[in-house]
Amino acid sequence: MTFQRKGPPGLDYKPCRYGTSRLTFRGPARLLRGKYVAFLGSTETYGKYIPEPYPALVEQELGVTCVNLGCVNAGHDVYLHDPYVMELAGQARVRVLQIGGAHNMSNRFYTVHPRRNDRFLKSSRLMRQIFGDVDFTDFTFTRHMLESLCRFAPDRFAMLREELQAAWVARTRLLVQRLGGPVVLLWFAPHRMPGGPEAETIGADPLFIERWMVDALRDDVAEIVDATISASAQAAGLQGMVVPPGEEAVAAAMPGAVAHAEAAGPLLPALRGRL
Image (spheres, rainbow, N blue to C red):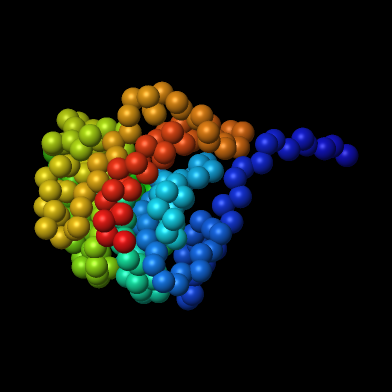
């Protein structure tokens, strides 16, 4: 008989659900009565490997309940397909929506899983017409598919990128309208919003998001908060993170604990005036 020594445990995210929603969120579950702020977004908002992600840090400073509705690898479809969570977020005094990539949502070219938005389900007839020489059964994840198409057919890929960008603007506007009330958009990334596409690449996360896309939403949202991660926060690396053995490379690609502390800063004045 052999025994394996367990490595350091990872974080206990205290996973929880709200009402009839099938989504699992980071806990502990909050009692949502009275005034609260709802945070919607992807892996960064959820705070994977982060003991206290920026929604928790904002709560400590504001003294107001902040419910973390972030989902790992989420796109807009996660929320638009969940009526209960939309109602829950809609009842918040303010909603903070992280600016995520344009790739993890269904569009005219392909369909993603309704809850695991990073999963590619099927290509459309339009996609197969344009990329007739591609076997889409080889793909499981949206990013892998897009990286492959970019390398294989960069000219045709430009058409796909434009569709995803237009769809992101329209879907973000729809999500904001359905949430109702003030929505604060949050840019939380290690680089400034790019002015245009990066040549011959699919670009950095959040994928395909350019400044003109965010500017197009200025009249739809209450405020746009820029929490670009500083060079010093990026240099801090895994400092303050809780990373199980073997997951260091994955964790290193995500905003660290110092970056989350930075993000809470510019959010505070944006929220205080609306509570």
